[in-house]
Image (cartoon, rainbow, N blue to C red; front, side, top):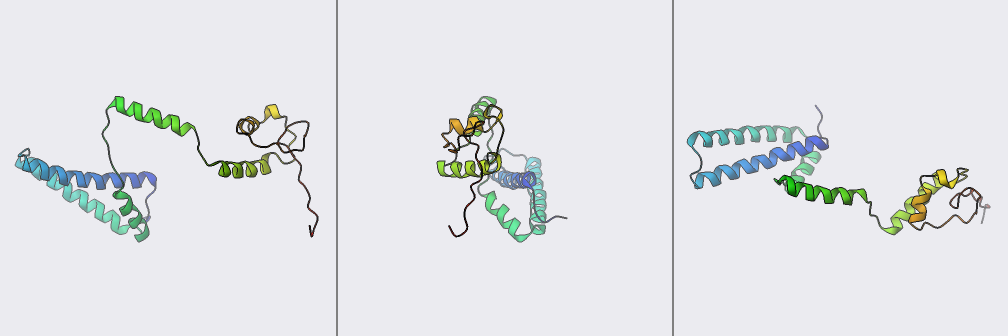
Amino acid sequence: MKDYLNKEETNNFLLIGTLLDTVVGIKEDWKKRNMLTKEEHKYLALCKTYAEKFYNSVLHRLNPKEAEKIYKRLFKFDIKVLDEYTKKRLYGEFEKEYAIVKIPREEFEDWTEQVMAVECKNCNKHWSECRLHEIFQENFIPESGFDWHNCRYAYSEIEKKRGA
């Protein structure tokens, strides 16, 4: 058996941990308010017992580094119950934000230099057929200065003299 959890397994495991905490809270709170029959109390106790057994079993077979990482995340993991209206509003905003990548200008320019080194060096493709041309132009990326007939970003490699 593997000694780590992938993303989906980690989320499931965190869900079980949160469920375990929730069951304990419900059992205590509802009992105080006299909202549980003896049978319901027993069911929640069984749920807690078996969830703890599962949780501890998985936690103990994980690599200690992985277990520590998950244990730390458990305290930053939260579950919210949303009605459909709120969900659409929140996820709608998320989808809008997700559609736009925001990075500092310096990082973006470093990225474009790397992309240009692969895509624009010695490129003979016409600018109108290039998927990067519009991105570079709209984001004010400096032209190569080579004034090639096909594209303002195309360039040839400059050979440096040894000792220079």
